[in-house]
Amino acid sequence: MGAISPEVRRRLIGGAIVLFWLVMLGVLLHREMGGRGVLLRRPAVSTPPRAGESWLGVLVGGQRIGTLHLLTQPGERDGSPGATMRLDLRLRVRVLDTPAELRLAGSIWRAQAAPFAAFEVRASSGGHTVQAEGTVEKGLLSGVLHSGGETIPVQARVGRLLEGDDALLGLVPGAGLAPGQDATFESLDPFTLQPAPAHARCVREERLWVGGEAVPTRVVEVTVGKASVTAWLDPGGAVVQAETPFGLTLRRFGREEVLAPPGSSDAPDLLAALRVAPAGRRPQRGAHRMVARITGVPVADLPTDDTQTLASGGSLLVVSPPLRRAASTSSAHTLPPGDLTSALGCNALVQCDNAAIKAQAARIVGAERDVWARALLINTWVHANLEKKAVLSVPSALDVLASREGDCTEHTVLFTALARAASVPTRMAAGLVWSEELQAFGYHAWPEVFAGRWTWTDPTLGQPIADATHVKLATGGIEDWRGLVAFLGRIRIEVVEIE
Image 1 (tube, rainbow, N blue to C red):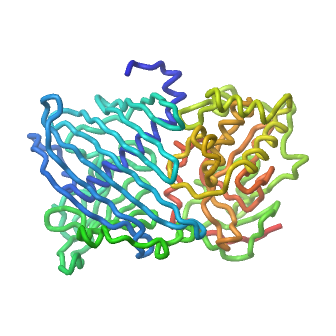
Image 2: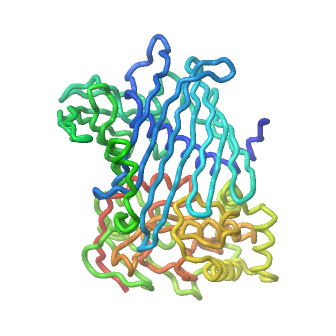
């Protein structure tokens, strides 16, 4: 694939980040679960890769929701020695009692003696599929993303991803640490996708039962940026069990045991597992003002804007304006040029410059000239025309337009593409919202539009103005939501006032 201009690269960076996440998921899991651990130092001589195979169960709250099969096969490509690492991840969960499935399958071939890799990966859930393939060489990821019948080129700088002995790929160090010992080494922060120092500490020795056998392990706690992983390493350095920062556990099983179907009736409800039950007053859908005390995470890390601000005493204040005052089209209130470009930009998953997206946007807004009125028309259309259905896949506006189904992420991505195609400045938000079904706050996504001020809207819930039970944790594009994981399992909410 030929080089692309800096302008196009910036426009497609969102797709590159998503593509990179798909690849990194496979590689990181393989390094953590199937390899021999990550060396703390770069070896003097590159050693040939070894064949290996692992079967793991994926658990949430002690219940198995899926399987992970990892396979390493040494082999040459174009005369160069290396190894192919294959991954097949299958998850089956429920979302508000509706079964949902996800499959992530792919491979990455890594050269033994050069910083080069070639990959292909496919994520699918129901009828939704995103596929990617490409290479990583000299710090540059180059590839294509297939979604909604379109093929989109993507590029992204990934730095020293393949240098040394994968020191930037692993969250779990080698087996050389004894209880009480610690070490600092270079790794990759999975939330920022940037190189970052990792700190590992061996806290104790423990025996785990695996397939009827007591396996001696060393328990190692590893912190990279805001991510923390606890791993149980066998004497050879392979991971027997790992607990992730978002409630997911990976555990070694025998092949027959892990392939036994868990049964959809036994699958846990994913939203229920991630819900945040509040203390204090009970919220209600449609509230126009909420004051909440946030604990477990620094409240200063939360984004603020015209709707969400910090109140006295460090509490969070969310005020949903009345519809008639939600936006002002006064020319005195405008976005800076850089922010406007971003709020109208298209990328690999928000294909607002695609002919089908532009045509649908034109049909929705018709001759309407007012920016806020256009946003309301698009909100109404998206809410009315998308079937509310759980989809565990990478959202693409083109795919959603074709399938006409999805959850909050699909609603938000399609709204954003249609709005930007209609010249409505839009950005995406992710966070929490009160759910009557869960009787708790659940993770959610919604769009924000600018028409004199940033205003939250929610096509999933059919709200022209998002109510005050929304708590924003991240804003921007999908590529900016990676930090959302840092809040999972940590954030606590006490509702002080609700109106």
